[in-house]
Every structure is written in C-alpha cells, then in structure tokens.
Length: 87
Image (tube, rainbow, N blue to C red; front, side, top):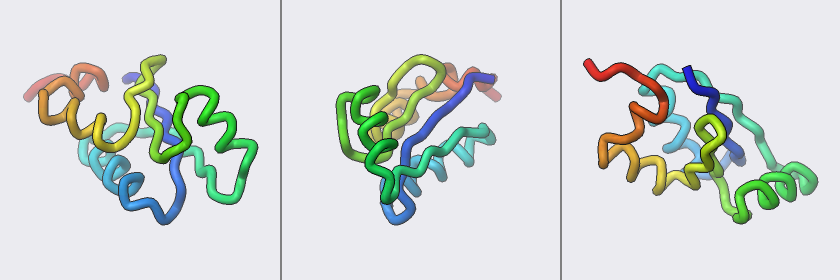
C-alpha cells in the first residue's frame, strides 16, 4: 500500500471530508496537525507551495487539497493512486 500524508487542522471541514474519503477507502494515513504550530505550517507550505489545509501526498505525489482528492475520485483515478484493487 502507498504511504499517505495529510496536513490538517482540527476544525477544518475540508480536512474532515478528505480524511473521511481516505478512511472510506480503508487506507491508513499519517496526519500532521498544523494547529498552532507555525513551524509545521511553514514546512507544509514549503513542500506544497500552499498554506491552505488539507495538503495531501500519496506516495511522493502531491495531490493538493480536498477538492483535488475528490476530483481524482470522480475521475476514478484515486484507487489506482492508492493501489487499491478494483472490485
């Protein structure tokens, strides 16, 4: 299974949606909460080129945020990125 990293904040509804989609796929992910941690948020911004959350990586590929994750799902490309076998 591919490693997944998601930078989040606790109260962000887009973070919740993105985590719910990943959880519904049965995949584990590493969550890095940037709440109140300017150093972690700066790290995320340097890696992603964006300061908004969530920021999601699947393996070494930066997916973007919640909208981009759901777009991959709508285009039926998310499972292959996650290396989930089609039913």
